[in-house]
Length: 622
Ligand SMILES: C[S@@+](CC[C@H](N)C(=O)[O-])C[C@H]1O[C@@H](n2cnc3c(N)ncnc32)[C@H](O)[C@@H]1O
Image 1 (spheres, helix red, strand yellow):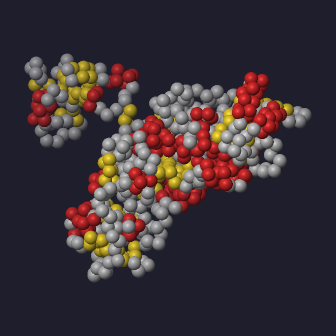
Image 2 (tube, rainbow, N blue to C red):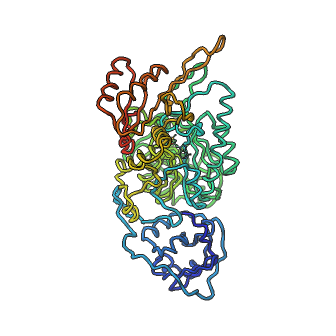
Image 3 (tube, rainbow, N blue to C red):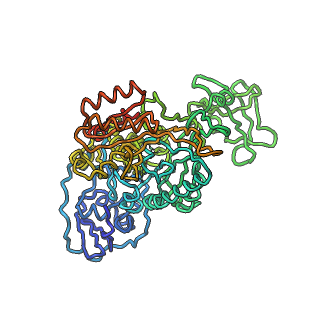
């Protein structure tokens, strides 16, 4: 992916060939028949080009068209879909190059062109034809499993149109986050320390996100009161205060009981653009309120409900001072000191078209039909999108799952079809599904292998998108990259690594103390883990956190004694629920888990590695 070695020295296009010289002395020469957009362009359109993508791509602003050296080296032809996409794309040129043609075309060591088949495909989900490789700079329809800082560094500059992040607060405790939100902190010092750690963690990631965002692109940062004010200051520093566009308030629940303060029931979403004067933007509207339509659209005719507006103006100009005869013979003039806003002829046309309503005085008024109005342009207070709650059809069981409609709204406003959507903390893949549904390209990154598997399943189930390397190469389907584990590998790795993998896969925090862990390899802090007061020492009151222990055994079969000692630990620590991970369980062990529940009402969830790998755990953990 890293294409920094492919820097361009010069570009030349004549009627038959495209020739690109690289700084390292290599030269690419390809027939123009591979690039219909260039082949059909005029000499002037071809001659104006600019360097982009850290000088490893070429952008033709008059054609709204771009190519990358990496693609050219592979001899990649232009897919027909790319041409259509480019007509609406707003590709930013981030570094103006010198427009010139090579005086003499270098003798080519050109790559052999690929056959033209497989460049345009039918997408299983929508039956839409789309290019195999819509961006020449970056692979799309890919989920990367890994730390986004590392993954983002591998992306070229200015390659995405839209980036959204919904990072967990307290990311320094990475793995707590997939299943459980942050717990309330107990003291101001704690809160301050954790905010600082959070910002330190997020800053380099946001710097990378700003780098990969196109100048015409948009960035959305989803957070809440824990750190929103600090995040805004940080983002102003990174994206530029002038590129801050909006603070969106999303009302995420109808009410929230916060003891002795106001219920915190909204999230904050900061919207920044990439630095260009014009950025991709599509107006969206919400319906008028009942109250507004009642008050304003008070008239009705055969075409529907309408409101009226004055047809006079305060300035003269042309044929605007005349007497108007109404259909029932009344003669009317504009109000004193005013003129008609339209010429007599225009007014006549409007009358014939049924656009005029007459007051009882005979004064003509212009009709505005409700069904022709787009609605209210979207504002920054969003209270019309419900959170994902139990019973929601889209619910996967993840506490931090955001509603699809929320992501669709942002994506539709700030990207065009075939634009590239990036979510670098993509959880169960809401942004990816929203992008896919709306015919955008997408890239997802998540550190949790579990999250990656869950979102892969969601893309398959909800979007009907096949997960397959060959189909992905042919422009259909998607792939998950860098997923570290298979059952076979997991049997072979050192026990500590296995423990870490299992705990992380469950969204828990691995136990740092590897020796003498007292039967706990990791902990899960569930959402809404309300802390309960307990006495620290005389005169001091502390808060006891609710947590679930995780025990991991890299064994073929966990037996009854393993379960017995886990039960003892759960009794000692007073945990109502615990998780056990292994390759399999003996029937004795499973029986014991059942009788433990009958005796104590404490639950042990026995998970197998296969279940984790097969994405079955969402159901067991929900
Ligand atoms: C709040 S959730 C995102 C939820 C998502 N918006 C949705 O609707 O499903 C945050 C996600 O960030 C992931 N994450 C945390 N730290 C990360 C990192 N450094 N790199 C990539 N992903 C990370 C977590 O695994 C988690 O899945």
